[in-house]
Image 1 (cartoon, rainbow, N blue to C red):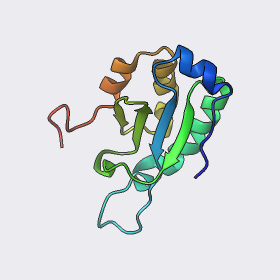
Image 2 (tube, rainbow, N blue to C red):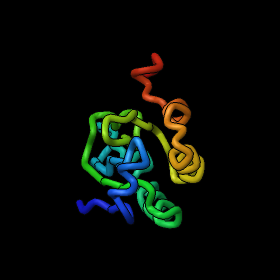
Image 3 (cartoon, helix red, strand yellow):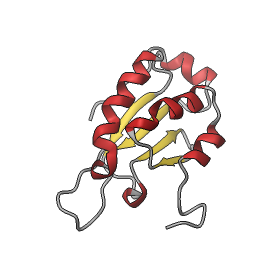
Image 4 (tube, rainbow, N blue to C red):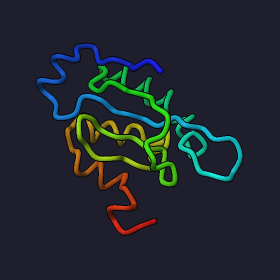
Length: 121
């Protein structure tokens, strides 16, 4: 899948700790195994794409197939080397982008936690 680029990736890389947002868009047919697509990524991706563009593309959105956390998805991951952000839905995009644009990464990770890190699932 094509990566959606930031307007000026070199400038973004110099100024921001994280420059890319990887997003799982995997969709499995049936109910046997969970998938991010079935858990809301299908609806999340176009909203996230539109609202990132409206905010000047301060992150590049990188759709991928599976990051191994579909049980808690939709799965997002800040890159390079950032936290997973799990379970965000289309209705959460403004809040999520507010946190990421303000570089409140710890708060974003707490708002969309990885159950494996907080003793959940």
